[in-house]
Every structure is written in C-alpha cells, then in structure tokens.
Image 1 (cartoon, one colour):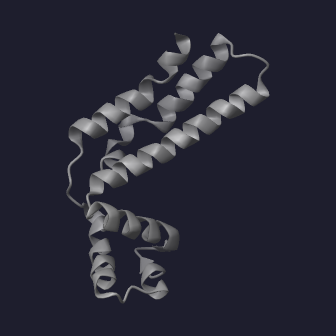
Image 2 (cartoon, rainbow, N blue to C red; image 1 turned 90 degrees about the vertical axis):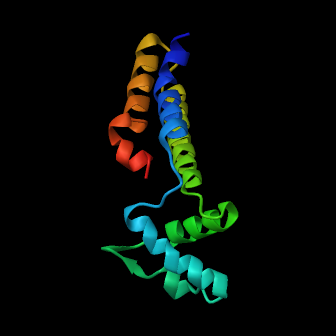
Length: 131
C-alpha cells in the first residue's frame, strides 16, 4: 500500500495531461513547421536538423520530434506523453537505484521515493508538461 502512494505524483500528472492537453503548438514548437515543410518536400538535411534554434543546437530532439510528428500527423499531445514516459523511465531508475543501494524497502525508502516522484512529476511545472 505504501508503494502505491509513491505512485500518486505520476498518476496525478497523467490525469492532468489527459484532461488539459490540447493539440496546439506553442511558443518555439512553431519552429518545427519548417522541418515538416522540408521533410514533405524530401529536402530535410542534417544541416536543417542541426541548425541553431534560439541559443542552442538540438539535433537529436529535432530528429525525435520530426519522426514523432510524422507518425502522429504532428499531434503535440503525443509529445507530452513521450516526455511523460521519459519521466517515468527516470522514476523507475530512481526506484531501481534505491533497491540496489538498500537491503530492503523500508518506509523511509518509500517516503524518499515518493518525494523523488513529487519532484520528477511536479505539477508546479505545468507549463513544461502541457507545452
């Protein structure tokens, strides 16, 4: 039962994403329009994916978002769920690390796992989760 309470933060965030997510690109997501235009023409190159966006270059995220956009017809809600799954993977790794470093799961370990999940799945970062 105590382990289930440690899963409340991701379940709460999943409910928020399910309830409040909309299929509307926001802020710098509109820069991906040029990627989809080039992709539809068949002229998307490495240089396009490695181009500077704002203050950084993000080849692999660009590649991921273009592939995901192509698969989902650029429904940005799938991006939110993909990022949620990455956060779940991080949470699972924190859990495994706790299991490997402690002899048994105590109430203190479960409390720490709950606090880690509260930070990983913080709804205070709703702008990041829902954009």
